[in-house]
Amino acid sequence: MARSRKRNATAGLKRDFDPTRWAHLIFVLGGFMGAWVLANAIEDVWDIVWATWPQSVSRPDAMWSNLAAIGLAVIGTAYAWRRQDWFKFCTEVVIEISQVVWPTRAETRQMTVVVIVMTLISSGILAVMDQLWQAVTNLLYGI
Image (cartoon, helix red, strand yellow):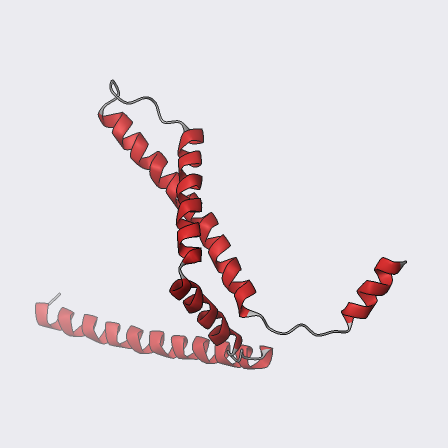
């Protein structure tokens, strides 16, 4: 009962925008992406080395490449996270993104129609120019 009252009391409060929370998320997601990229890169390089020198290099093992990639990603993420200038840059990016005014559904639909119409007009002009150029070249070459 006390827990539900506490939730109801805090439900009405609006949280202030905290860009550092999003900056932390950027670093965490960057670490996950770095681990994935490194794991694939290590496996690919190991495959190439094994294919070139099969006698001196053992067969590629996904577990070891994943562990190495995770270790390197953790070290890289920790290094990047502790750099104050990088963290400040990410925070400033989050603040700038929060100030973006996104178009409404009607504006998006209207701009989509404009793009489709302009694409059709451009393709029509290019088709006419192509046919003209084909006629001119056929006339010049006597085909």
